[in-house]
Image (cartoon, rainbow, N blue to C red; front, side, top):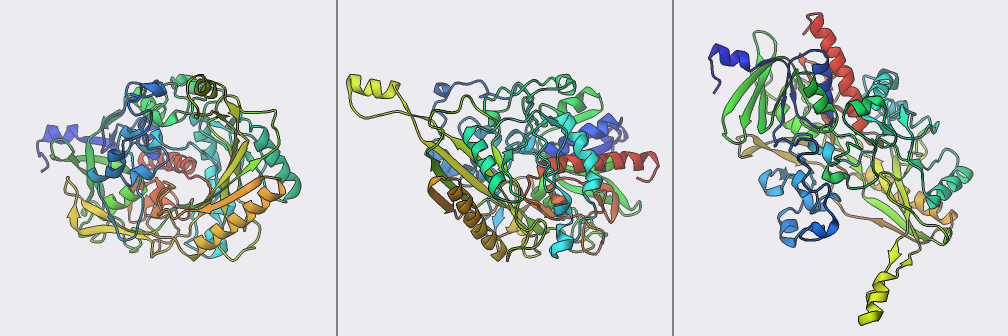
Length: 570
């Protein structure tokens, strides 16, 4: 229970509280503390200090007990996390373990989480594509979801703002559906990737293959050096945590920057149970947390609260914050809280081989690869499905070694490798349509170790996803065929939703309080001193990666919140 000692209450009172320390939470605390607000950051997991807490970052392959592979017992104990591409012996310590944090699946959904300071910013794929008006106007034009209350022009200056600080590598490609940004030099495509790019440009109108924009310091500016970061070393060991700060993470960038302001208080091991609403004041006054170690319930107070717990956990916190004013969840006058959850469709890929460029190979590593921006239903509705998809694209070859024989013959086969053919591949990144039937709720019976109801999920694909998947396979097969690629192998897998790790929605933005939770400034319509700026706020999903948009939306909302506080409106 709350300690009513006056001094204790004073010690637990701040100007602002930020729930969550991942990509969006890190930006919220950076902006709020930078504007002089004493800010408490609540993180349910442990602390992870930049460099100090990256235990595997400099290990050689032979220094891992299982040579990078996880024992079958670990994989069997973590069937959900084990399906994530980055879950390995070098990075498993940054993933939530399935048994420790259960949830209810009415339909299969792979919920990948990272409970620690920095959250999944230590694990993300660092792809940073701006959204365009084709995305923000999509719902209004195509008739799905509700209209976004903002357009690209509202977010464009904030994209520039966060790109300069985070450091985004890319090229000025001049593609309207993928706006250019404030880029550091882009990473080059290799010869076969460039060959395919040239082929697509020559033979397809409005289709492109570009170097994927990514949050890596290809050539640091002074602002990055001031953060203590330096140039990306192209190690491709990012999931271990980067001691160089070569890629953007909360741990390397926004959190230590906020710490330097002297205005940040970080409290790890704090599971947020609910937001406290004062009905007499008509606003939120604080947050109720459970200490994960002591199980003690503690209340913290502030004038403004930013909810950045990551999309689905943000839904959980809001749904669990009930009161006489909000009996069905915080700010849920519309009844849409927890509904219209969406994700990305990554369930198809295609691979092939190429006989050309036999005299060339790759040298070193790259933190990114090729990217095929959306080309379907951009300027007109041309298919039998809504919206579109982007695609990754990469080409590589490697040294093949012979493992047969004995003695000198075996040794020679192991030492003298031969280059493989060029292999090429693409994976689908499709936009899914937010639907009321895709929803999350609180389980009526089951609770976690801290007394918080488990999240109950009912999320699935639909016919639009299937039609989009079929079209991706057809179009990429044709593009690969005309490029002269051989042994083309399209594949669709039966993965559950969630492995894209791009869950969005549930507390969507909108102009109408009757159909949305948040207004154009990410304020809860019914409670102006609570902001939601992580994936939960997204009205639709685009097919571009969402993290850069979370950053820009958060910086914009924090600037607005500070302005309103100075005017006494909050």
